[in-house]
Amino acid sequence: MTEHKLENATGPETPAGAEILGFRPLYRQVKDQFVRRLMDGRWLPGMAIPSEGQLAGEIGVSQGTVRKALDELAAENLLVRRQGRGTFVAEHDEQRILFQFFKLVSDDGVARFPDSQVLDMVKATVDATERTALNLAAEAEVIRIRRIRSLGGKPLILETISLPALVFPGLADGPVPNNLYSLFATRYGITIANACERLKAVALKGDEAQLLGVATGTPALAIDRIALSLDGSAVERRLSLCLTEEAHYQSDLR
Image 1 (tube, rainbow, N blue to C red):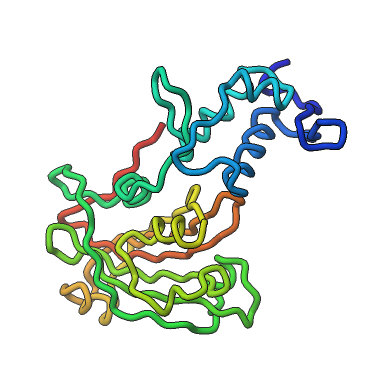
Image 2: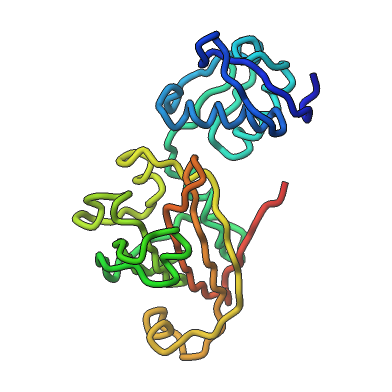
């Protein structure tokens, strides 16, 4: 059995003690099973998961297939491998979550936590851009947050964050923490697994420039991000307007 072979494999969840995986690259099917365990709480943060051999025997695939699925989850920071101890479900670590998705770095190369100042937060009917980005109905409501983020005390980012109101009940009634993704995980059980970003050079408009303390027309980097939960649902649209005179966008490719 090879890792890329398309075949049916059995596991513990059908009446005969087997779960039909269907026809997809096998390690991807196994990975999907593990993601479901994270989503339904069978694998909790900090928990040690069964060994590769145990999982392979349980699902009915090769140990190499299980290893490849676990490697992808570890690369996505959903699992943590500890030498000599095993594989564990990643915990909700503030620093890890923040730097996994925050890519603006000062030109001196030092990674710093950004500070955040919320400008306003409202609940409103979704607009056309939000409706498309978050796959919402025309009458749906979103929580819309605007905030300034600073590095080393200097305002560098103007963010507009749009969240489906039904997915995050009560969020609009309380304070907004610096690290929203940690809040999503701890209060709502929603883990941001990955994100899709589009980058574009823009010139700041008058109100945008004023909030960042620069002249109208100042060049900025616009980062339009759609954040996805473990099941692939779009749960956040975030538009960040970033000043890059003293900072840069850094992405480590693997």
